[in-house]
Length: 424
Picture (tube, rainbow, N blue to C red):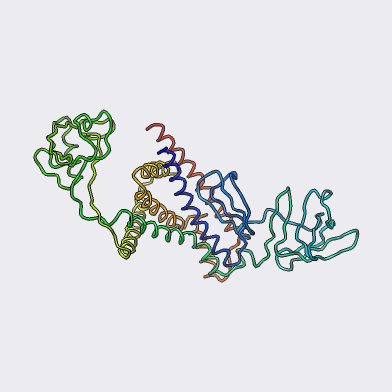
């Protein structure tokens, strides 16, 4: 039951992070009047889908992100061309459906050969019906029907490219912005639950590994470490780890406190294959007491957490650039693994982790990497400077190549994560 709960919380966390990001794109695109064709969480085959108003909401198989597909961002997959035979269904003298196949089975329609069609500006279609040309006005929300699938037309003023630089920039930036807002809220909630940290008071034993000296010596999780070989350890965890490391195969005299009882314990660190120095098979925890945070303090501490975490994220980017290694990258598998471990620690820790991931997602998407939001914002910025847009086909190719490269990298990282799990 606990494992099912952890899986549920992990999946729910990722669902919320991605949904909030894509909702930012969706909401501000709709406010700008852009037709959002699909709001998707995940990629690949559909698991669940329903349509509300003009947008298809979809849950897909691969949990690698999501997207809000706006009209005009990519070439339309369904088009009507001159010389093509179609069937029209009219409602109140306006075309509401344009059928592109199975024309003989359509009832109460007008069939003819397309002479001229404009579904972006004039919203008209001219048909040759029994040798006579007739012009029909097209409704702004008319549907193109092909292979049992309906695709809504996108008049020019409903397309992404028709909007101002500011409107498009806001629609793109809104995704990361929502992640920043969510991160701040989650940090605030975490501080309300966990409180504000006070100066550390002592070191204690954490999780222990079977068959290792810590368990063999009778230590238990939560034991407070008073001294080692007569030396007070205080709250310096690194000092203690160094003492253990340099004491391989040498008995150490520990004094621990368990509740009100003080005990003397002899423990001998030993070597672990593939690791240097002595090990006792236990994590060492620095105990940090907390106090309740006021409503206002939570805002201040949330801001500080945002700044500190942002700094740590960029330090990580810098290290990765200076010394790239596949082992330093983590894909969905490793992220799910770490999230599961954190979920075991409690809802407060999971909330903090979700805040960190939300902040990371927002920052990562603003990097100037093709296919990410940062790259799209750069193209918009160049357009603002030049006074005219870059060729959409060239921009689309850049984003396609970037997406393909990121997807291949994701596959490689996931493969590496799976191998790491199998090898232990």
